[in-house]
Length: 87
Image (cartoon, helix red, strand yellow):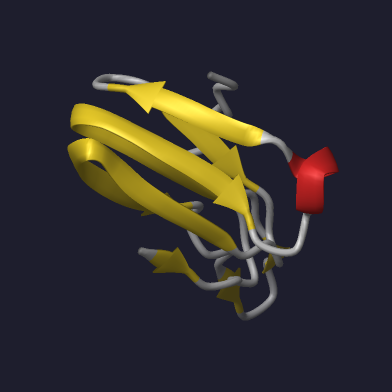
């Protein structure tokens, strides 16, 4: 499965099985990532990835919340700030 680039940070979470993950265009230096059920990997903003179940998996893609704007208040911090977990 191709995970296209996005404008904000995301996390790929494996909810069942095992998955292989690699950054598109990273070549050998990019390295492969293996995730088991319950593990997650941070996907930086602007990065494109390829993920596959090995032999099969259930994956969930989480996105960082959008920043909120309000009149007169300026930029606020996101309501929820998930912490990246390197698997």
